[in-house]
Length: 375
Image 1 (cartoon, rainbow, N blue to C red):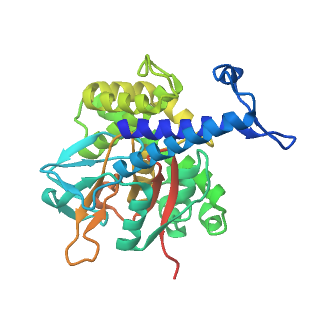
Image 2: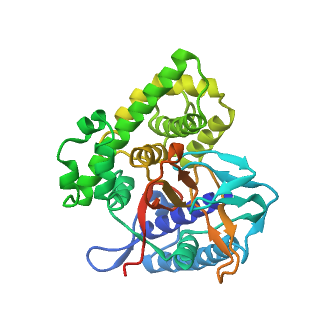
């Protein structure tokens, strides 16, 4: 949290420094900004004098910024931990202690072979490229970025398999989607994927309602996915001021929002999580189903089950973790390999095809496609 505050301060300070000294529209340099700024600097007869002071202060700030960035650089090697703490979801999740964690390719990894370190986006991408040859591709900004990043990784056979899996899915998807998929643009595919994710989430809620009626305990998959849905709902509602989950928290204060989600995920009982999800799921699905609204781990879990394709998300994720998890590689020039911060597996071992991969930039908010270098 302190490092994030330092970054926020540096970004704000640089913006305010640029704001107060701008080129005058008629060619001469003049001090601009709030009038209180000039009143607080008596004795400056010319803009040049004020500019000189700003320049000196800018040099001091640059030196402080450089020292701060050097301090924030990760160590040369990851620091080992006796217990592996591996997050089980994206966008919004909590950390879960595990004796072993899943590798990106699906095999188990021993806890003693897991380490963590602070890494920026450049470090993570360099590691993914060196180990797997993956590169990121930005498919578009805005709230559709997750679905845009997934769109071109879903193949015609994936769509055909889903459409033929049941009459209900055939009705949701439409009769011509399989024939049209190859020629669809990424934005059109993204819209269709959002509808697919929402339909699967609606089905998931109906399954939870059935378990509630019969009193049966939730299977492990449903218990895991329910927690992911709850954390996504908590982040959405806190950020939007819906329900009392975010009481006393400003929606613009993202670190506070993230901290509240962590607290709720760690302290809310399974029974209360189920109660909340069943009460508010319809509201959440209506919000997330709107074109352009942000989506996260719950929607990746929905698409993983719909297409029988695992979903892997790499990068930092400030909602749930402060460090990147890595696994040790044997007989490799690159000793450590970055693990995904979220992995949505396919239930009942129905996996078909390779995992879908996305990269989350700057610890949250924007997704990009991860793909192998074109041959």
